[in-house]
Amino acid sequence: MDKLRIEGGRRLEGSVRISGAKNMALPAMTAALLTPEPVTLRNVPHVRDVLTMKHLLESMGARVEYQRGEKVVLQAEHLHHRAAPYDLVKMMRASILVLGPLVSRFGHAKVSLPGGCAIGARPINLHIGALEKMGVRIQVAHGYVDASCSRIQGAEITFPTVTVTGTENILMAAALAEGMTVLNNAAREPEVADLAGMLNCMGARIQGAGTSTIRVEGVDRLRGVSHTVIPDRIETGTFLTAALVTHSDIGLEECNLQHVMAVVDKLKEVGAEIDLENANRIRVRGAHSLRAADLTTNPFPGFPTDLQAQYMALMTQAQGVSVITETIFENRFMHALELIRMGADIRIEGNRAVVRGGTHLTGANVIASDLRASASLLLAGLVADGTTVVDRVYHLDRGYERIEEKLTRLGAR
Ligand code: EPZ
Figure 1 (cartoon, rainbow, N blue to C red):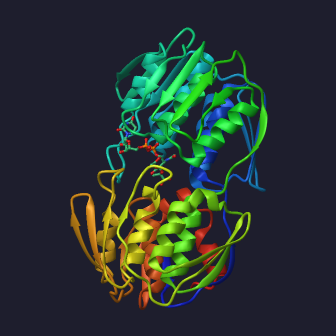
Figure 2: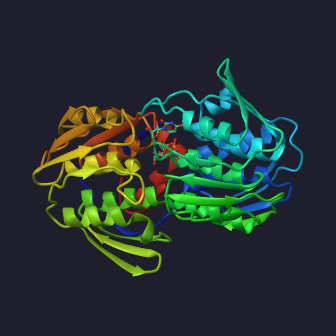
């Protein structure tokens, strides 16, 4: 799918099933590198990034069977290749998540430096610094990270900035390290807690995941496991926003309300009616008129940066002026330029965007720049007058499972 054409102005109705979280499926797949035994993952979303990770792990010699029912079976018994080549890493930065497991189990890894991406430089200096503290010798040359050690050692590590994949990489490295590892200022995202839960079922000894201090007592060996991936909280937030922007009443199935509390609180402030119907079904009704509300993105449990673009699309329709402050990435407002072309009134001032709401959006040809920006252009297209064509939607395919089918089933065109 390379272009999406959306006819605006239609209400949504019915229910949508939320898929498994891409940002948990990816570390869960690399965690399979930590054991020679088979690992079974359920509720894996059928998205491009998961296929890319499959190819990467297979290129090393792991067996990866993708069975259509969102089930993936992986086994990294013998790896003939402990490297992640540039041509795969450039397609998906999360490839860096093989570094910790490879070094920890095999004592060596050669991983291409992920290039920057549209939303920022996104260095991996914190991953590297933490591994060096654990006794790993690291050389960065010719665009590659070459890491080696005899036996990785536990250490006390304090991250100066909260890093999600940095925390995940070190968690996986520490699981097989010699001695105790303490992670301070660790990421508290639900994906980190779910990964820790999976590792503990494999025999790891991890305490405190989900808080900012995590303790890991290294063990000699990890077992295989069968694990179900948590629902995707970003897809959940995207559909909550879609309901509000189209003033619709829809149900979200198989989602986890606890993982989206900051989003629900903010959307209620804007005027949404959101009810928890049971443990994993949310009902959302978009009030007829929405109120503008300021937003600042933060690491979990704050409002996630991955929903900032979708929220901006919503604020173009709210009554009043809202100020959106992006604190995680240095360049995550590209979607604003495209929304302006559709008629939005947005002024960018550094890491703040001032949105004057209540604007009439008209369909236009727009270009997606990153995964979540493309979702915000889709939402704007749902409410704009006329036809919107979103180009380069391969970004969408990376992180949303068949989003056009899900929206069409809800009544979008
Ligand atoms: C994860 O990326 C997610 N990806 C991102 O989702 C998400 O936007 C991000 O966390 C923030 O929540 C996956 O989980 C696969 P970070 P990650 O390390 O781990 C700086 C999506 O749309 N930093 O938490 O790469 C970094 O530049 C993606 O699914 C360093 O300076 O993000 C950023 O400013 C987009 N040095 C901040 O920390 C480092 O070594 C947070 O980055 C690492 C990070």
